[in-house]
Length: 265
Image (cartoon, rainbow, N blue to C red):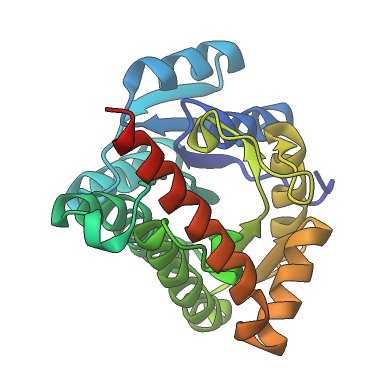
C-alpha cells in the first residue's frame, strides 16, 4: 500500500474468506487494527487468529441495519475512530429469471446492495463527524457485461455502483472518500468451482486486495481492473449491443446444458 495510507481502525465485512481475508491481511500488515466481520463467525475467527493481537473477529449479518450500526458505533467508542470500511460481503445465485424465486432475489439484494448501503450509511455518519475516513464498496465486472443467468447479482452490483458514486460526491466535503471497485474475476469462494475463460482469467485475491487498497489510497471513485475489465467497460459505453452475440451464446449454451440434464433424468 501507499505509505501515506495507513488506516488505524478498519472494519472488513466478508473477512472470513476470499477477498475480505486478503484485504484484512493487507491492512494488518500495514499496522491497522482490523475488525474482521463475517456472518460465518468461525471464518472470521480463523482470519483474526492469523492476523494476531491487532485483529478482532465479530459475527455480522450485513443485511441487518441495526446490527451494522451497533458494530460501527461500538468500534468508534472502543478505538476512538473508524478510518476504513470495506464492504466485501457478497452472495450470488444462478439461473434464468423465469426460474428464480422471490427468495433468490431478496437474498442477493439484501446482502449485496442493502448490506453495502447499511454499512456505508452507518460508517458515513461516524466519518463525517470525525472529518475523515474511507469507504470501499464492491461493484463487479458484471455491471459492464450484463451476463444472462446472473440477474439478481448484476442488479445488486449496478445499484452498488450508482449508490457509491453519488455518496462519493456528497461525502467529499466532509473529508470522506468513497471508492467503488469493479474488478474482473477474483479467485475466491464466490467464484466457486467455475473456471473463467482464458480471456477473463481469475487473479489471486492477494493481488486484487493490494490493487484495491492502493486505489483507495489515491481516493479514486471508480476503480476498474484488470485490462480486460476496462475493455468490456469501454465496449459497453461505446454501444451496449456490441456484446449481445456473446450474451446470446452464453444463454444458448446454458439452455443446452439444462435440456441435456433434463433428458438424462
